[in-house]
Image (tube, rainbow, N blue to C red; front, side, top):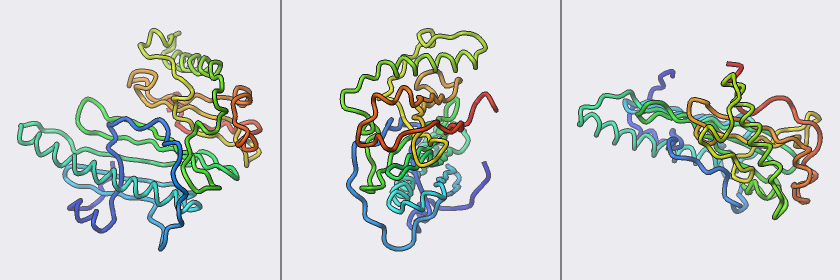
Length: 277
């Protein structure tokens, strides 16, 4: 990772330079049910990036250019990132000081958070983040967070609000499990069942969900379920992204949001394709 200069993290924090998450802790699958309506922040918007390097840790936060259209969300994600990165660097300093005292030599820690917008409709904005961090150990961690923004109320809403109360998701759950197995078998070059992997089949309502735009624009064409390493398989398999097509969603979308869905989805996925790398 390229070096970025900053000396004392406490000083950088006081100047409002730093940002975001303790990444080896598991992130929530979806944001809380609702947040109060936001007020438009006063003054200039926060930056889209934060970056700092100390002897103990390198951290950075990246927000998408399009987030500027939603000042409250922009400020929220920036402040959240700043707080979490500050905590990460503080912990890195303590951990590495103790390890050094114990005669343990290890590389500096690092934590990177990248937020992206997956879809926008007249009512909804779907965003997600991928975070990579190293805090010692055999390998870095990779985590995913999803968030749904209501443009009408200018607040975060629970993704589950998109679906009818008491909706039957069994067909979608079965589809998700079969698709994970298919993706795993493709990577392995031979059939591999979810049962033999030692991991349970995913549940749609427990998954991190992002909206995928329709080809015609302005609506949602599909919902993708994102799984970080360890969610549905071992670390070595990497993340999974499973697309739930419109045909399976038709019977479960809440009437409040039905007009936000329609049309065939774009081909692009949120996560990079591991088979293409």
